[in-house]
Length: 340
Image (cartoon, rainbow, N blue to C red; front, side):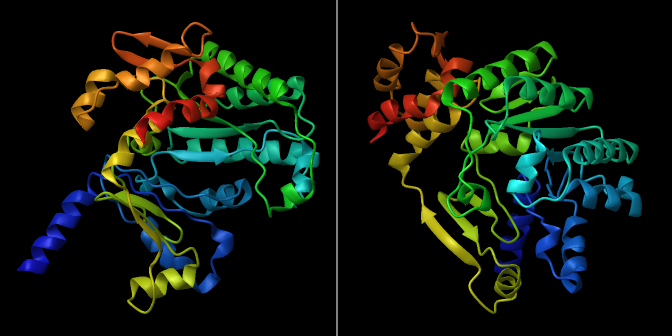
């Protein structure tokens, strides 16, 4: 039947997508918790990934309460770790003291390993209020001591309307943040974490498959409240409200919060923007095969960044250096008018 063929096609596709579930337990009402627990138990396939986010306290408690070894779909665990300092916790409304948080973080990682996880990712943030270079270096060492397989290092970005932004904290200046970034790149490389994207570092064979699909402009599907997708030349997002999402799935309301078609002429620009985030960079021949366009106009703009050390050109491949990564936004502003 026509409907059956459509359904079969969907499940065939499902086995090849990166599955991402944004899970925040504090947003769920108790009576709806098991509904999401059932979603999390679905196993889409060996090449797919499933993510959920909780506080260290919640996660440690869950690992102690459940036999999560049987949930082998969760092959990668990611912990977002505020690295520094206690006063930042107070700014964002957290009651934990930093030593307690550090202990809970360590215990969460230990519980995860005891439960059978062998692929753990930890996040760091630099450019925080009151964060000195000495504190940042200690934060990096604290994370390395936990021996994760993957590490991400992000600069703090103040978003208007958030409690932290409204407190008007004083952040380290641009030079100090650059020093923190370059220190992390060097120290993580020394510890055998190869940089493969502006903010991401991994042991051999441990790159994030999930995020790599974004940077390659590959198609992906997201399911759950506020989940985003790029599929069939369209970007779309589900509604953020949990009940509205459930109603939408059941055909009782709007399911999509936004949907935009990505015009074909915009895709080369998106591809450039995303691929220059990675150490793989842009291969001129691959660019031509993909878009039937010569990369020459872009290459001409990039050439001026080679001598100052922001960009490399080798064997037909353009890539940014760590120095170029840090100022990539400025480089892209200069580069992308060629894509119009």
